[in-house]
Length: 136
Image (tube, rainbow, N blue to C red; front, side, top):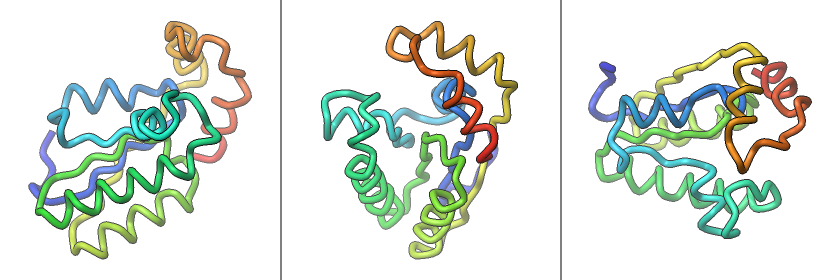
C-alpha cells in the first residue's frame, strides 16, 4: 500500500470491519498502534470501554513520539466519531506530517459475523455496530 514515509495513517471503521487485519497485511507491527492494545495496557482487558480515556492518552502519546522521531504511524481504532478524527489530524499537523484516512465501510452483517467469530466480542450487541456505522 503506497503511503508517504512520514504520515499518520488512521484506519476508520466499525468494530469488525477488518481494520486490524488490514493493518497486519499492509504495515509492520511496530508501525501500528491499536486502541484495543492500549486498553489492555491500562486495564488488562482490551474490551474494557471504561479504560478508553486512558487508553487514548497512551495511544496519542505513543503516536506523538513516533511522529517526532520521523516514523510512519498507523492508528488502529474505530475513529468513527468526527472528534476522534479531529484530534488525530491535529496530532499530524503538530508534527507536520500528512494525515491519511483509510475507511473500511463494511456492511453491518459482515461486521456482526466477524465479531461473532471472536470469543472476546461474541456477545457484542448489534446496536454497537449500528451506532458505529451511523457515526461513520
